Image (cartoon, rainbow, N blue to C red; front, top):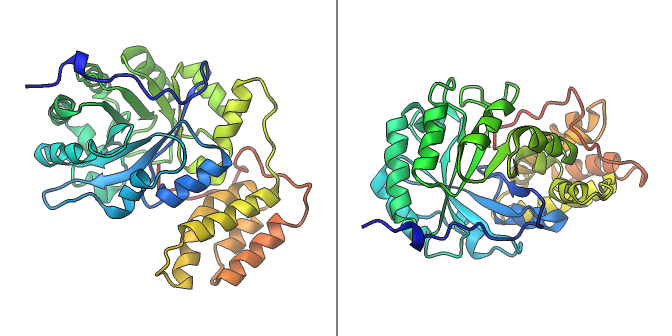
Length: 351
């Protein structure tokens, strides 16, 4: 027998400031692990964190490195556990395992646009088959005792099923929808279709978070004003600017937005390097991993893109931090750009 509506907790954890929009860090595979969450929290936590997705299939178990985001969470903020898969039996098995952990809720990934993922009919691949989505959401909702949320895109190659998918969000009493305003096939190339997010806000019965190109606090306000969304979910622009959640709260409270000095960015980079480095990884691997983050950070350093150009070519830790010192510690009066500098492309592969 399914769990009744009365038995379900449908209230989101009350962590955000009353009257302010919800903020969330988007789940990004190979990025939003426990150390990264901790670094972000020290710059200004979002209201909610989401784990990297737990891969679900017949032989799957809960990955230990992702579990750390839950069991070693010291951010002071709730964490939602995200799953990705299409096998209903094993999704239910995994959900039951997750419910025994200190999580805010369980999130289903229906938006990952990576070809290696959607070709397996998981993530964004599910959006091609509304009947399958209906089955998956129904089966999971029946066994989920707490909050059950969904992160998805507006369609696979177009929006032909979008209205139907929104109806399924209502049918299965989803507790929160995080909506990236692009199709799976659009990846990150197109403009975000905020009109579709607005449509979702007007259609679904749960809070909706707007996701996609939330580049700054001011841009977040514009998106929220247009869509009417309950909040924003931010991914790669939180890698670039981990102070963005704090800045959103400041703007919404009518306070001046904190201007970030380049020297603070240097401290962030240094902290990130030492936190996310795997103890067993060699120097080349650690530097390579750090360049993935600097790929985004570099969008806010210098208009010419010289920092980004040099950082991408660093081979050793000494080289990397010499470049960082040269560009980030050259002047205490130089500030980090609030918006990504036009023309500097980060070549994203996350969110």
